[in-house]
Image (cartoon, rainbow, N blue to C red; front, side):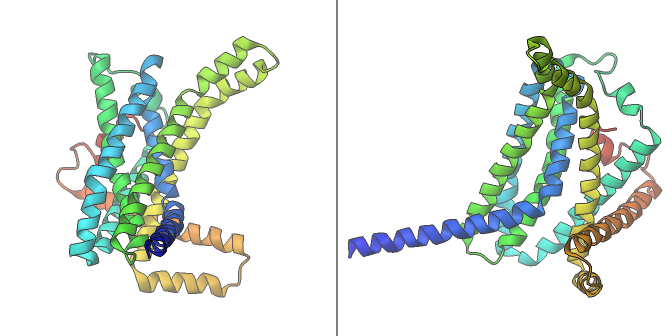
Length: 309
């Protein structure tokens, strides 16, 4: 009897692990865009810091991100899902609208002021000591992470809302930890790429050319990551808004499917629609924000992304 009970327990554990793995993979696919933006924003926080402070700053932001997810967002999501599950979609749409708003504002800022980042954010402002500068960077990154992490948790919860409670808990925390480790591990690599390039040049063992290429290409890579993250914000936000309006999402899906496009083309068309929805929603939100009487106050873009061009 005891042995059969142990086998039953192991079977339950195995089934739970399978469910957690499947749901975690599904949620991770849907949060890729947010993770890209999170990585881009955090990598930008290292710009202007001394070399010996880059990794400590990344570590501080990573700890703040884990706190955001593990202590604040996951418990709050579980409580809301238990008490008022209907609120998930409105919250997702509100967060998606914010992402679109911020993404559109960042795109406009990049296009209209392409040199601002180099001029104003490459080093501390006059009169700002390095410790204050670093603290501002960390706080800005953690504030932004809170918004993006909330979207990640909400999207993940949307994938597991019909699962049992413990499966929900397991998936949410697995995704939270995996995303944090993945994002900030990649950020640590990004901010140290130039060190790798310099080491290869100095070694001069047939890798000097590669080292020089890394040194020359790293600034462009950082700019590219920033652009990808910004576009991902608009795309993911538009996707969230579109899916929150079920009749419209169904109409778009059926319309594209009815065109009998090749799989890859249909996927690109779907992404294009999501991005267009995000641009429209973000533009409307930005126009409303700028029409408000306190438009001369600092924008969320300026507060949450103090280093973003």
